[in-house]
Image 1: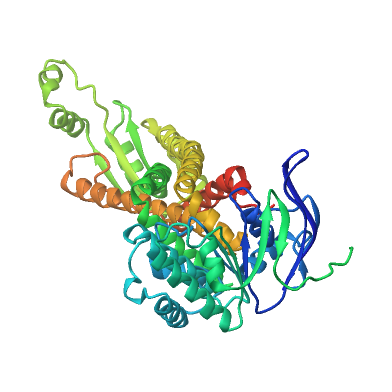
Image 2: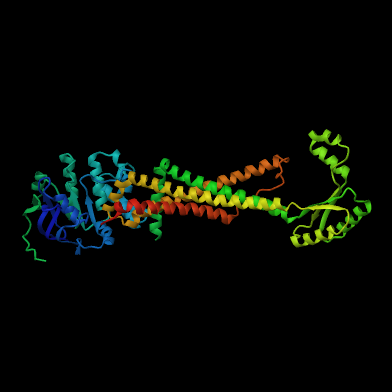
Length: 228
Length: 302
């Protein structure tokens, strides 16, 4: 599903945001990516969706080398990955329904089907009664759930979430995690970046820890990453 | 393709409505541009029509010498009556000519009364059949010139030539000002779209992140520009049409006006189409200009 081979990323000369990162994520896994602020969690997620290009190394997602993927194929890559952003990234001028179904609309999915899918995912996140609300009319937790609904509406094989519970109270955070687990049980690979240690301990999933841009620990099966 | 057009149109219409105040600016500019261009075309077209109408039926005056005898007048009358090209003609005696002057210019009545002699010459006012060409007129003039008792054959050709030139100049000025205002419209649309983009750059970033392709991001902006142009031009042309109706009504209710018998014609359909298309084209160029100059770096996936 995801393969990192000796990946380096830097924004200034000789100062690395990520340094020699290698790991493999298999289809259907649920993984926590953890580490303190500035450890490189968000950078790693940005590399997966090709928001950034690594300085060195190779990244394979769905078998495609995203470091060298043609620019024209980036939208398709992103549509195959559901992303829940830390700051939700909802379009303020669009309703909940429009936000959730925007990608489907660009794919030419007809209105009836968009309504059906939006209803299903919004029901899953408990917001089926707020389809016509605008993001600013919702609480932080509700906005986060809309972001989750948008990320899963296209049935992605891979779901990335960047601190999805950072703005939520423990109850709401638990709900979101339950939702991710539910999605994962349906076969979607889930990669959640968080520094919430309590949650990580409670969920008992594979954990990849980053520290100052380096892979500090991977609780999953140790896989020998071949030299490229 | 249909799906892309549907998406672009629906997004553009939503955006036009949401930022309607801002969009009124570019819509107003295009409307003004097309109104100016359309008005010049309308005035030029109608002036040309007036000159053509006038030229279509050649009219001239045959002024007689004071020494012209009755036999001479009869010879001229017979010549005109027997000509194949003369539609109608009227004889105006010296007395009739003086009376008409006094009727038309009552303020100068006494001046004429105080003169010892009647200075107004007798004349024939001649109308040729519609469609009679200049060569025929020239040959008739030569024939008349050979008759005795004629002082001058007066055909006010210069007036027509001046009017025709004036109509041409009006149309040329229309193009000149039209091109200037079209460029200003392109500039305005381009800047309004940049402002629209500023208010929506976060939205564009999100669209990129969730996988909207470049075409799907650019499409609505381009359609928005084209729609602004088309709508503005439609309103501009409608205003010209309202002006045309107003002018027709005014001419009907002011019969004393020299051109009151003229029925103004509206722009031909293909000209209207041209104006609307020009509006749409201005919008297209304006949006492409702003996209290429400014948005490209934001939409780029590089």
